[in-house]
Amino acid sequence: MSVSKPIRRKPILLALLVGLCGNATLATLSVSQLAFSVFPIIALALAAHMLYQEYLSSPMEGDTPLCTLLAFLIGVFGYSAFLRTQFPEMGTNFLSVMISLVLVIWLALKMGVAARPVVKEDVKS
Image 1: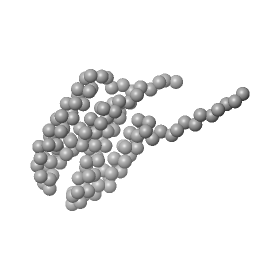
Image 2: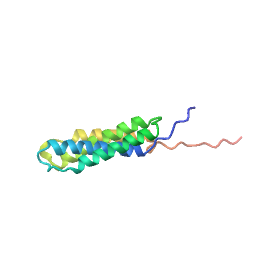
Image 3: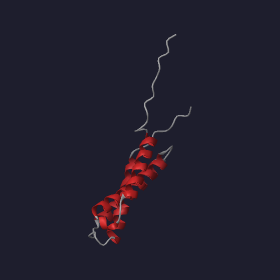
């Protein structure tokens, strides 16, 4: 049996923030219903810088790169669903919500949050 390396949570949270802020920046610059704000741009720059520094400080081993990609996509699709909920004239948010839910379930399974408990049987001889 191979011992799997633990998945670090800091790069996963930073990737989620980069996804949220990246989509918020694009929405701020391209959606006419939203008022322009410089804060998503600043937050994107800071979160991307912190994620890069985290990448330089320690290597991403095991399933950490896949989990960070999943968290980034959850941030992107989650903000898209939130934005379409606020402004229904932009279109339906069904696809964004379904993709976000599937990605959240996949991330929970990969990180072991939603793993089934292993039943240990006592063998008496």
